[in-house]
Amino acid sequence: MPISFDLTPEQEELRERIREFAQKELLPRADEIDEKEDVPQELVDKMLKELRLPAVWVPKKYGGLELDKVSICIITEEIGYACGSCIPFVEVAGLGTLPIVFGGGESLKEELLPKIARGDAFPSLAMTEPGCGSDAGAITLRAERDGDEYVLNGVKRQISQVHIASFFVTSARTHPDPSLKARGVSLFVVPKDADGVRIGEREPYIGTRGHKAYVIHFDNVRVPAEYMLGEENRGFRILMRTLDETRLTLAAGNVGIARAAFDVAVEYAKKREAFGKKLWEHEAIGFSLAEVATEIEAARLLCYKAAWLSDRGERHTKETSMAKWYATELAVKAALHAMTVLGGYGVMKGRVERCFRDAKCFTFAQGTTEIQKLIIAREIAR
Image (cartoon, rainbow, N blue to C red; front, top):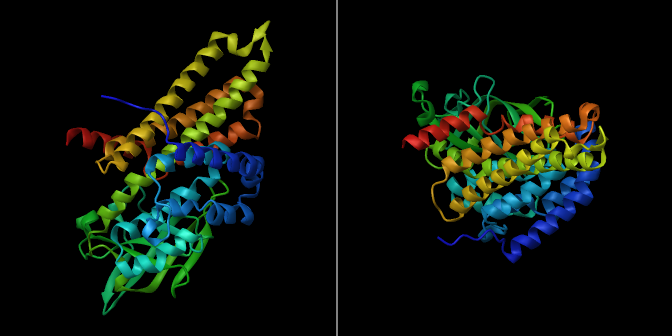
């Protein structure tokens, strides 16, 4: 079976363009973003309007870039290398856009997708609730039919990028029997400025501090029936199909975080001497660097394999969960190894400890490591 690891000329050009932006614009301000817990508006505008990061998920029919999944992995790896807080500008955009692509009616697509593609609107996904996270079928937010509208009541939490979002794709229970779990869930587009939508307190994280998550209250929020995505009580399928694609962005972004921590460790190990030789020449250090370097290559290949399957239209749930679990846990490991190499410098505020905090947050995003293993086990048993 012939196998090529070459990127296309277009993908090589894309990687160089995103890398140049990330190295010149994001990396020099990453510590500032982390400290101030905010991404400067000029950088937001560049990512949304100049680079058009959300547009990678939008079909060309609606003015989007419609990039292949390998290319999206390339983008998020380079952004993750520079600033973990900026990964959600691709990831969350996908979470809010793909349900519309997969389940929206034509009029809704024509209304929203061109705005996302231009950077004039940013979508978010409101899925997690105070009482459920990984068990996405256990949601309690209710949506009840009232004529040509649905009325939503409930609370969502840890909802990303609320401060820049124009609307939310919101999961809600539409079947009166809660025992049906996922079989009673529907998806709706809810404008941020809809009557009854109230943005609550911000929920700060230890890492990805430039990314902002909030509590959202839905108090008798009315949305038109045509704002439902897909069929009533069948929104969970759209949600899971979306996660199969967007989990890849987290995986690739964390390959970038792992690379960042690894590069700092290598540079330090090449310069610092102890007991008459460079640190990397000590087996305790050199072997750990060799281990992390190998695992970074393995994590990237897992991402590309899942992305390749997606681009071919083949099922890739198992491969995506493998990539997400492995890459996020590797990023934590790479940062811890870098801390060890740097010694006392490793636990001071700076790039390495920021990589650790960012990576640890991503192990929980879009399904914990344990959930990914559960998905993999189920896929193996299919």
